[in-house]
Length: 232
Image (cartoon, rainbow, N blue to C red; front, side):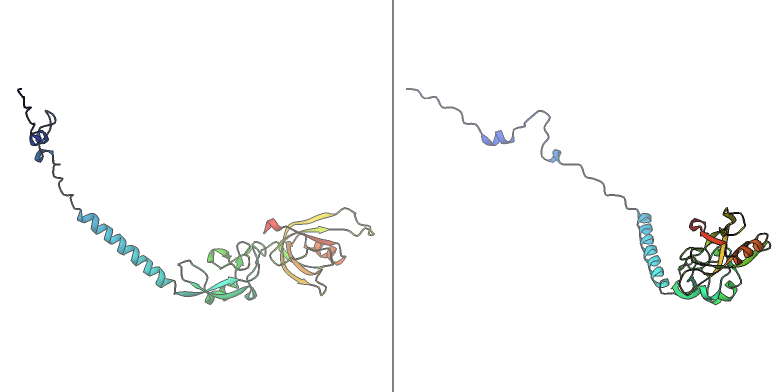
């Protein structure tokens, strides 16, 4: 019997045989070298300067926060056109933030000025809030004192408020029985309450043309005040 031997395949040749016509050898398949990135010293220097600048600004803020200045704070409401008095001002120590607050040392000069707008308690005074002349107390204006009974003035009325001055005739008098508006928006200059907490003495600033009439009706007990909260 004849036995035919099959040729044995060389595994080494199979492993190293090319897989395709376009296949690359080991060295040729490596990636091409990437050129090193270009360094930009100008950008790096700018970044360092920005960091140092931020640190310096923070340091200055911290140091300045310790600087204190003496300023004026308003303790009571001051109506627009009303004169500042020593009683409505107090001294406070605040951080020097660069805002032009009125210094406590200038309080005597402030007492010769008037409020440009209505100032509420707790306001830190600035020069823009003061004026040297008041339209409320200028020519053509008059202060009138009113003696009011309970029910003729609102509760909580205070200096700086705006009120309507109304003539309310006594129903038993011979005068016209209709109520009449005498002043649309009068400034309350001062308030002195009675012992019972209701009624009292109120001084208002009105046009001098109607001040005699207001004073006369007040002496008869025929004046009432209505507050105008939105007119402050």
